[in-house]
Length: 417
Image 1: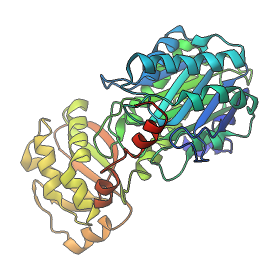
Image 2: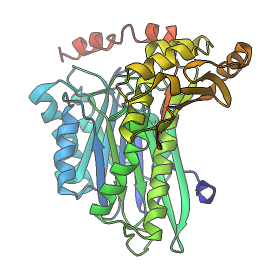
Image 3: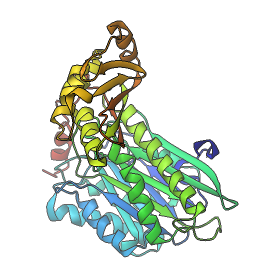
Image 4: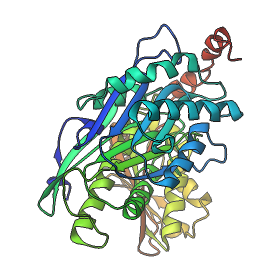
């Protein structure tokens, strides 16, 4: 199926009928010139669907956007980096509403047609004095060729922007899907920490789009982990405006299955890009579980291994320590039998029947020395499977995350604290 996807340029600006822009407001540092405020806009009405963090502590823009998406008439998304607008109380809600209202006014839309997203430091009010008056400039800059700028404007600790755009033929119509994502730390399932925006010119009903999005999120962003931490701002927003004039895509049809596969492909590519760009990671590891009694058992095992600090530390050191893997399988609370467990690293056996396999250790070390490899875990008890994407854990990760509160000094200068 993926061979039918033509990769194209443009990111979220690639599909017909979408415009985007990004500017620098100095949200985190008024002297900085990096892009930190972005806008995505559909020139025509569209279907919209979203998935949000399951963290019970939710940022102000999450609360506002959830209410707006329930209305189902979203036409634009405004997003900033540098400040998460989380744990900011009623002031945070006020600021999120102000961003939405200012954007709606410039675009001649209703306030509830705007999705609002923020990412960055938690606990500080937004420096609205550097944002609100710049929104007219952001709207004036809208164009087709700024998808890469949007991807750049939303990153925080990422080392580079992450975007994708594809074209696929569905029912004889060329359908374009564009997306971008940010995320490098605080990455854990349900959902992993990131902002993700996806646009498409396909014609999909609101109801069907919601189902496609939730299914795709479950098989992409809910399958990745870097450090096991879940954020307050996780958001996936998808807009479909039907600008390619195709008939409406219906569920449980050939075209519906094609579109579902394409959306999943885009999300999974972006999800994998998040793991590969994890904070100071050196390995990209696929954890594939087979032979579980149930889907839930397979998921428990995959998550336990993928999140284990001991396992991830051994990968960082190039150590094929299958003992740490099997111990994580054991505490996963899945129904397992130790004497049935097989563990392979790529195609080489590390553990057979719960015991050391005869593969020379040097061969296993050579595999784990690579930047990417797969851990295959077969429980040999059933037919259920589950797959996750994870990373190693490095000393540099700890050093990088020891302190991020230099921004508080600037916040004091701004009179925010």
